[in-house]
Structure formats: C-alpha cells, structure tokens
Length: 239
Image (tube, rainbow, N blue to C red; front, side, top):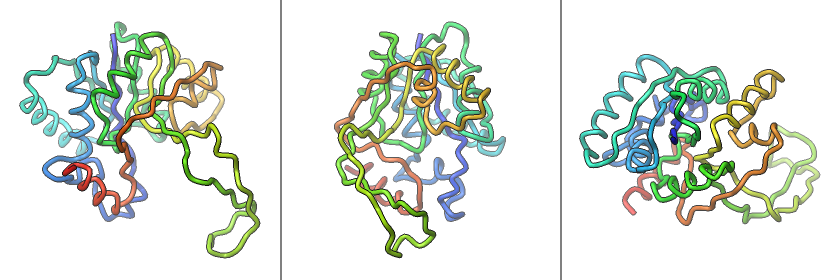
C-alpha cells in the first residue's frame, strides 16, 4: 500500500515576515496546502496521507481546509489521514511522518506542499515506479549555464574569480520523491545517526548506496519561496 507524506511545517524564512504562512496564503480561491492535498486526494493509488504540521495553531487551520477539500472531492477514494508535528529540520519532519504510517504502508511519496502545482498524473507515474521497488524523484534537467564563484563574497556584484561547471546530466530536484518505505527509514536513520543534514529525500537514498530515477514533468512545478512567487502562482492557477 502507498502513503503520501505531505510536509507543511516549513519555517518560510525567505518570506521575510511578509507572509504569515506561505502554505495558507491565498492563491486565487485556494492556497498551496489545499492545492497540494487535492492532487494527492484525487490520486486513487494513494491509500494514506500523513500531514506534517508546524504548531497547534497551524494544525487547526489545516484541518479546516482538509474538511473543505473532503466536501469538494466526495467522489475520490477515501484515505486514512494522520497528523505529525514537524521537527527542527526537514529530515526530522520526514522521520516523524514516516513513523506515523501504519505498518501496511510499504511505499511512500514525500511532497513539499510549497509545490502546489503537482498533478495526479505525475503522482501516479511516481507511484508506478516506487511499487517496482525503485527510488524516484520529480526533477528536471539543468538547462542554464552553471557558474561557481571560487571565493565567497557577501556582495555578489563585486567581481570574483569564477569557473563554469559542466551542466551535462545535472538535474534540479523537485517533489514528490519516493521509494520503498524501508529504504527511506534506513537512509534517514543513517543521516540522523551520523549527524548528516540532508535537504531532500533522495540524499537519504544515496546514503544507503541505491540508484535513483528522474521523472520530468511536462508542466511547471515551482516552489513558493519568496513573496514574489505568489504572482507566478496566481498566473499558473488561472492558466
């Protein structure tokens, strides 16, 4: 059986205090949390959902939006919903969420709710792969030139020695990312034990030496990070 682990506990530091909660900030008549949940809610292959929340205040709001979603999509397959409070780092939140699933959940997709435009067809494609006992991430190949500043500077406009990096076979990570549940548990546990900070779930898979597949979507799947991103999100929603 397949579980979806939805991360909603991020700190949103790059919002610079201009937005109280980027996942609940309006995008048209919806928000990033609802749009993300809806995509998984409408994916029949998903059996259970664990939603990782930030605090009790946010939890109450998330539950309210989830009730609206349940009323909005009554025809979708019924899913078991579990809640888990997030930790200090992303990997702590994923770990807590993984532990909340019932034993019968054997494969898991992890999704950052700050990427609200993921679609059920992509989720289904990813599930098809993880059920073959593979690790898969939504990603896209790097198309721009990648340049590295050799010396760190707090003022990037100040000239500095640089080098151009080979962009061949370089991929930009997105979510969802998934694998057999046991692989994720083993990898994240190894990272926690070794004191290694990982920023995405495929890093945990790398730690246990397993290969990863890339699933490129044919539509934008941007992450909402700064206040300016909401204008683009509004545009995508209207499109």
